[in-house]
Image (cartoon, rainbow, N blue to C red; front, side):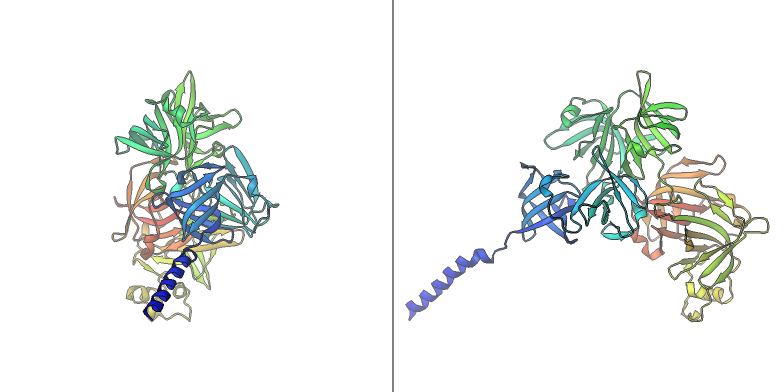
Length: 579
């Protein structure tokens, strides 16, 4: 009996051993495009042909191939098509395909044709991208969907220089199905200048000594490190107009170089590099004339040459030389050599938040009096008997309007009493019979609504205008600023980028600050500024942001501020923010 029992146990153990391979994880094939790469964690996110995302771990032993040769994770890029063989989300083998690989053609699943590149030009019905020297145009239709940060977004959030992934449902059509915008990690964090001291071809890394970072007032300040290492993951290296590789760059040790850099994945990366050739000159003015064919432009009455190696930055993006336009305000760092001036770095004043937009809408800011309130409408009236309501122009000046304007209200409109620092319910302002005033806890606010206090009061109106009318997005009522009706000179504009947010103190620190000088009508660079935003209305990509949602904002975002300054304190009453 014991022998029989022992035989049964032994048989079971042998069978379990034989079946273990079938229980172990099976190797699976995942096909799609790379949506993001985390070099620190060693993971890649794949968007498959069915629109689903999967995160895959890349191990040290994972075999990565491209065009039949072994490569590394550092050579993979956003939008690249890949075949990933994996077990339990751990990659065993990755086959990466270059753009337009003929092996990829054949039957196309919906949304599985991909094109990647940087946005060169964009209109409501067309997008032109550039990949290397190759330019391609595609059609945008009402059914084209834009994704940014994994969410559906408006087309106005696409900027020149953004890296995008286009997908198509029909391989034979130029109509874009989806546009996916790469995350901000690839945006330009700054422009560096320093002495090249070391080039490591194996690690694809360069070292620069005594780095300085460029500021908007055409100055260079110490970066904060004596020696800085940067990764080189592209071939955007230039010596003048000549594109060079790391080997050629290594022969230029000791030379001063300019670098537009990003901080993707927590480390500085070279986005574009230009070698300094000549003595430095700086210019800050409008482009008075430009010829793309000959590579020449006139800035501040000076002839300046530019080429493919010129570093051009706009809206924190690396853009093409074709994105420099007549009358653009630019700050040029140039090299003077052999009697000619060559642009090494061109910083274009970014597009104004108040400019006309791709979707044929625009934001406008008015100062006026609440003339009357209707059912989902509000009328802007004159500031005083001698001064009608005012509208802020794209140039930063206030212009008087001739006639009263009616604006459409909605339940999404943010109405703010900046004196009480309280949100006013839309239904309460319209005196709706469906709203119970007793629901308002603040006694002063409740009494103001009951007494119709807000009618005839001065306010800032933020409006989205289109061919369909004028929609009020936010209203900041400022009953405590009586002088606003008579002295508009204290209300002025500031541009900058968020440096720091203090949620407790309700303050915002801006860097790259430019104030509009109402006397000479120019934007002037200045030092960092701290704003009190407790009395302001904030809109982020057209969406009102209440004070308890300040955590949705982050450093680097672009800000347009309307301030009213009668003391040394800077108070922002309107803040328009975009990414």
